[in-house]
View 1 (cartoon, rainbow, N blue to C red):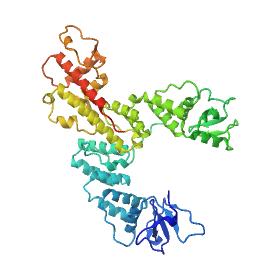
View 2 (cartoon, helix red, strand yellow):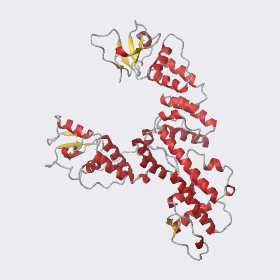
View 3 (cartoon, one colour):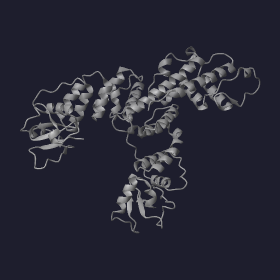
View 4 (cartoon, helix red, strand yellow):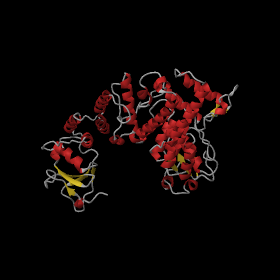
Length: 509
């Protein structure tokens, strides 16, 4: 809570002069007395400032609230006043001042601070500062410098300060460096701070939305209209929708007290959501059977809307249905679950996402911190190591093609589809995981069996299909000579060990 002007501290010299024109009140309640003639040199300085109500009886100077703390504002004002520019030796502190300088259009300070940043040999932190200040040119420059350093394992791709960035920005950095390493063409104006704009598709005539009963017409039970963002009317009963306190109940109450009515005499509540999402939300709120929803995107939108309007029953039912569809969109589900703090769902989604053969961008990445994406990548690496350890018990490194086993198998941070399709350990991991590797290996008494193999064998899968998966793996290996049953036994045993190890790994949410 902000203190009253009388309780606020006053900044030090030269921002404590009694003849100043105005006072700037910082987020930590410090007053800076400044002269308009100095601040007037920058046209944008007063944009976004909040003027505080003045004490009764008037005041000699206006008080204007700013969002910056006193240390940041003190440094910024010293760039504007006729005094020595401050020297800052902390890259993130420079970032705080730089963001304020960009915000208030203090161009000289921006130039000076960017020069100071260029002196730091810390590209990831400088990149973070550049993105937070929306300085794409500086972000691009530092991303190039980082790529040229050539260190890309997870210990070198993330610093704690990047937590202030969205996961989408971190993804775009990794995607940029992956393209740089491959020698792929990179757009001249590659954007780190903003998500890619959706390409406009040719407009197609939309089908007429048909409202089902009981929302489709006036009735003895309906007493208000909920109108969607695409102007579809739902005739609803306010009592049913307001059985429990909620944000929607407040909005309905306000609509009932307004003078606005439809042509047939019903009060109207306008909501921004489309009818396709409002309909299942209303159906989940009304008593009776729940709608059959299987589309992940619709479920997610309904779930978000239920939380937005604080509809507890609808949120619980939507979440239950949404959880059953996590496997359909595991990566996107992970970010949604993290956003809401659903630990069990986030861990399930992350485990399912282990089998995604390529890292892709999803809009949900903009909803959570880069730290959550980093945690998933680290979790995925630990799982990969478990699989590789089991693979080494099954097939020695000396039998694997190529000489860069460690780099190719473990330390790749960003997954490219072409890479994964050619990685032996990825194929092995996918085969083990999809087969549900939890059962014991083939019993030795079956080794000498002649004729057909049992229909159910190891790893929990149907044997013919599982055998096909196994042989697909072995075809990627130049293979050693040996008894096939021995290979199968070792494969089954090591697969179970690998999946058990993965099951024991815990994702930090």
